[in-house]
Image (tube, rainbow, N blue to C red; front, side):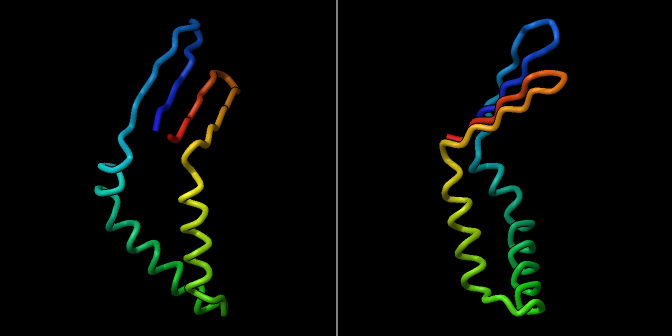
Length: 80
């Protein structure tokens, strides 16, 4: 994942974030989030397998996504 920030003086900062180490560090949180989603699905009577499958499809569709935010300064997030 690449994050680019355009400063007010016109210079740009480019930060490369490796996704695999970030996922490994946050994997306990991800497991707890999946369990929370499963419990919420049971409470609201939603099919757990279908909900998790839909979430997986959304996550696997992220490569190639570009997010451009331009307010006070420009920020570009590209997932490759």
